[in-house]
Image (cartoon, rainbow, N blue to C red):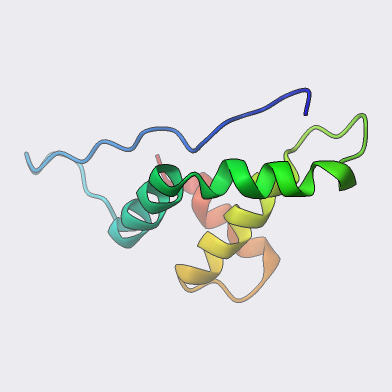
Length: 86
């Protein structure tokens, strides 16, 4: 894999009342994926199917879709919900 994006970025949650986490359940899922190393394992397993000039890691794409479904998404376009979160 040429461009490993690694795991999801660290999520920081503060209880100071200034910022609201609208998808708080996603924090637990993302941290579980990171701690278990599931993102790295899936990326490694899907490496043989990755095209040489692919921009996106297929493992990350698969996990993003699974996370979108877990958050209530019902189609592939709902991955945009993940992008909209800070």
